[in-house]
Length: 58
Image 1 (cartoon, helix red, strand yellow):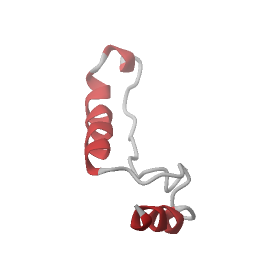
Image 2 (cartoon, rainbow, N blue to C red; image 1 turned 180 degrees about the horizontal axis):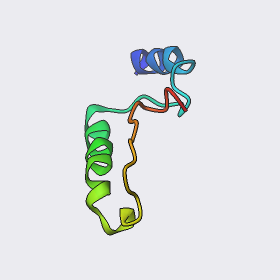
Image 3 (cartoon, rainbow, N blue to C red; image 1 turned 90 degrees about the vertical axis):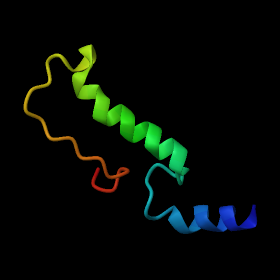
Image 4 (cartoon, rainbow, N blue to C red; image 1 turned 180 degrees about the vertical axis):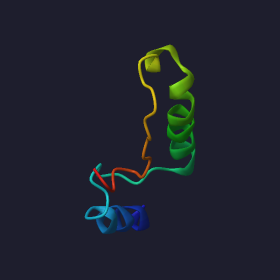
C-alpha cells in the first residue's frame, strides 16, 4: 500500500490524469482505442491519426 502511494506521488508530474493504470486497465483502454475506428461512432472519421500516449502530449 505504501509503495503504491509513493508511486502515485512520483507519477503526478508526469501524469496529467493523476493516476497510474494497472496493466488490465491499460489493456482494456488500448483495445477500445484500436476497435473504435471500426465502430459506428467513428463513421465520419476519415484519415485521422490517433495518438495514444496516456495524455503525455495533450
